[in-house]
Length: 219
Image (cartoon, rainbow, N blue to C red; front, side, top):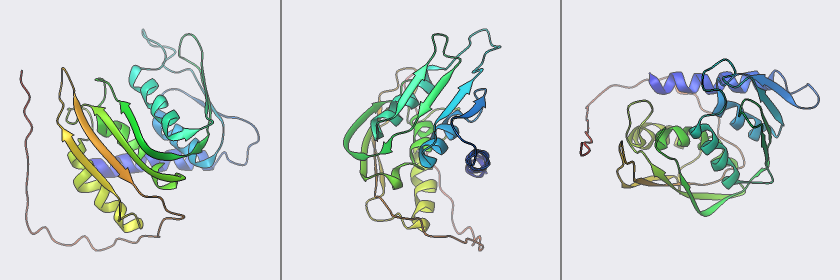
């Protein structure tokens, strides 16, 4: 259910972007809602966007550290993107570059959001890179506000295989990390495709068994 809501949110951002593709020049958005989705949609569409009034009415206006970190992640997997942020962080201009991918990429996701939050934004970009992506992400593997890397590994990645992403698709947890110190490490690998296969999943199937797992950190 959580994954379905998040997928619906991303599709909403894509529809919003698609509805404005006929407009000339920079596409303008307001507010911080669907921040990752707008950056991802702009990158896939190759369109420059401008986002204003980012938490303009808040006591702490502007981009949050995890949003700035996501922009740095996008920079690492693309070539030629241009990011302009004003002094207060309330205005952003993003001109996307080419999705290059490649191996040997590393990114520290910090302690504000989990690695899963960053993977959600990276997954739609990775299949369309020039080269297969192999990236090491550091930070929180398990935290209470977002999807864990275990959810991404056991639910999201198997679904992607229906779209033609199979050989070379991997999410490996090398080290667990939780608050307050983070310190987790995962490796994400994704092949490239020329086009995604169309998918029609109508049969829910039957639940034949259930499982669970737990992660504990030193308090």
